[in-house]
Amino acid sequence: MQILLTNDDGIESTGIAVLADALADHGEVTVVAPAEDQSAVGRTLSDRVIVEEHDLGYAVGGTPADCVVAGLGSLCPDADLVVSGCNQGANLGEYTLGRSGTISAAVEASFFDVPAIAVSLYVPGGDIDFREYVAREGEYEEAIRATRHLVTNALGDGIFERADYLNVNAPVPAATDGEHAGMEITYPSDVYQLTAVGDDGDLTLRDRIWQRMADGAIPDPEGTDRRAVFEGHVSVSPLTAPHTTEAHDALSAVAESYGR
Image (cartoon, rainbow, N blue to C red; front, side, top):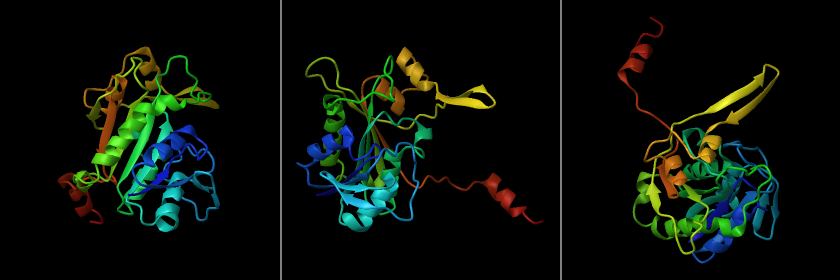
């Protein structure tokens, strides 16, 4: 199997290093990742990127979407699968789908008709400052286990005939030795709790859901990605790209009345 591995935390991050090592037993892994941290850039695309060789593979002076285009278009054109991650920090909810660089790399792969798996690590909040925190290798154990399981079992069973990519969120390993998380098929939560706090000239954009999770209470119902991870499960959301909906009579009536 030819695996293209990328991320949005940058090629120097721990998350991509541990996945590169873990997936080496499953096929030939080609790492094509941003030279610098490109978190939350969505599917931003560059006109031109500089590619340099790196100990892991190729460091790209661009975004995760750039890396997928460069990888599938030139550096690893025969890839059977794209894996994006492992991101430090969960990517949960509908509103992250267009913002996350990790997920955007998987979306970009879908336009090449290559199946993809986006993998993120949920680190519980509390006293952790996510701007300073660096997850240790051992904290990726459950994410690695889930990714290897999906790489081994998902490609040959028609799963990607119904989904373009899988959005995977894994918790840090359980405190009890030998206890592993279960895996739950989910859908992205529609809970949205971003706010802008401050005066007119100085606003802080804050996602209140993280504090609610740290406090031990979240509003997301059963079956959602956030609820599953919060309860200690590996969340797997099968998703499609592009995001479309069906035409309906009310909109058709508006179109028919245009120009009359």
